Length: 538
Image (cartoon, rainbow, N blue to C red; front, side):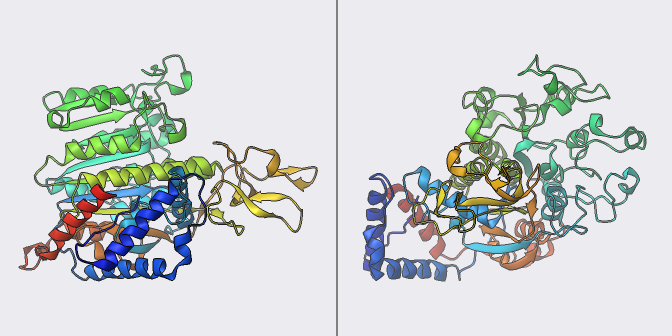
């Protein structure tokens, strides 16, 4: 969707408005085609001049104190994924795709983040989560501990714990929340509350006996014990909260979804009992979630699957909530706190789609996360809410092949290979399960449903699971102090900036100075009104 600021009396802006609206009309007529407006230099010059004027307004920086902080983390959402998701979003609405704007594209400040772990050139999701949540780089496979901790060695935990921005916010009196499409005790969310030398210790059922005996705690247990009363917890991972062999409420006959805990504890029941005198609610399906009145609930625990939530393309829309639906409920609960909130949102299954070589699943997950970003923007304000969108790492995913404008993102390149004379898809992986050889030759993709939901795109190197990529990832920011995210940064810089914006954690001194919470310039409220008018018009 395009958003155009209409300034009365400004003929240049009005011209741009008419051009864009004509493009929207063209886009709705059916199959995308090359728009005539793009042949006219006036189209590009007007667009660029409008963008320039918007950029000049950013000289008046938003230096408010951030009441609220939101971090959207697209797991595995490298820059090629962002670009491909942008095209997909446009094509889903009948456009060519390339000219579309993602919600994150509209953020005024963009930086690059260096994702390496202390012991890994190409990172994993645990060490990176420790960086962008706790502010220190760490070893791969570990969460909430410094690089002095060694993966899977329980005795290296104590003394090496590091705390997260979620805890800093809670200690400052803010409400805090975690929303994810993976398990709530998966790598990304767990770094917000846990201190664990192995990301795979989901419950004590996945831990070696010696680690349990040595006093190390599983991640699910830490979710409820380390930071008491996390206000919002939503995602999957139900089976890790229940005693071993206890049947699941949704899949009672499926043993793979039975409880995994060897200690016999029922963590959901314990949470419910502990919160019985508070306005707290446990939910496990979409109907229960959407029946919640945020005005009457202060704490919510939502566990919607035994493991990860289903891919958005495979989601049962009657029983499984979308990421957007979870985010909306979360914000409406959290924003009641007059001191504000911190919310971590993970689009976690972008990563899973890529690992499986299923680009269509991954990109639809990215589009859904972008939809959640847009919804969050509608129910918060840029004046008091800092929103950051980034990724933990990239993937060995890319697309190319000189495809023409409007080519379906899941389609074929417009040529045959000049080596084996066979077609190839625009999307390819550097490695992964899509490597197929038949009679010593590359598989002919034209004989396959290469636009199917679970099609595994061809890869150069055969692997059962595709790997992460090592390049920098983008950081998009808006709201108070967003301008501090610029240039190229170490990944662990992110929570320091967010804490500074909100005056929490170790970044409080500047808040006591006369200039620590300066007001917005008079021009900015009028800009907000214009943006609101734009949404209504377009």
